[in-house]
Length: 233
Ligand SMILES: C[S@@+](CC[C@H](N)C(=O)[O-])C[C@H]1O[C@@H](n2cnc3c(N)ncnc32)[C@H](O)[C@@H]1O
Image 1 (tube, helix red, strand yellow):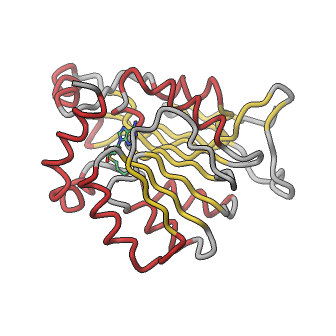
Image 2: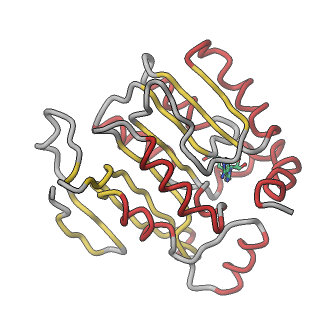
């Protein structure tokens, strides 16, 4: 079974329970969206693995002029997203597909989000990050929230059964291509697991793409409790 088929099967069963259960453990989603708002105003938002559309609905409210595109491999999840986002009219474009290559927009997205999606991609995670790097408009941001790791083997095994890989592997892959201007690693349920939030810009050969007028923002990187100035390079 392909990774796409196995996720489709999983979410065909879980879609109807998704919104009523996931708020208890998919932490940091609202916080990430609020941080985006604090820093810039996107014109075209792409969420990869948009699921039932909770983030797109939130982003749509915060940015009433933005175009919203969501892609997901699960038809059942998208059906719920479609209902949720109906009120936003033709600002919303939902697509069914397994993301592994740039979608090739006429207007490139200036905000690309992955929310609890990359940790489910298994071997495709590198491809997806590389594709997003190619797809993002100059000056745009990548916003990610996801599981990071757990020191409990039984918990990692349990999450693996639920298609989530928790090996602290996603953050280094992001850092290899994107400059993290805001990065947090947080604990959940007394340290049972850790999740991260990442807001970054594409690393180009000459430095970081920077939107005009945003150079005076405080740039701090907080990782595992250690606080360091990320700076602009
Ligand atoms: C845990 S849910 C997160 C949904 C939503 N982003 C949220 O935060 O509520 C992960 C979603 O990513 C989708 N997904 C995983 N890998 C994908 C891929 N390569 N391309 C498209 N969708 C993917 C799954 O079908 C699922 O709907």
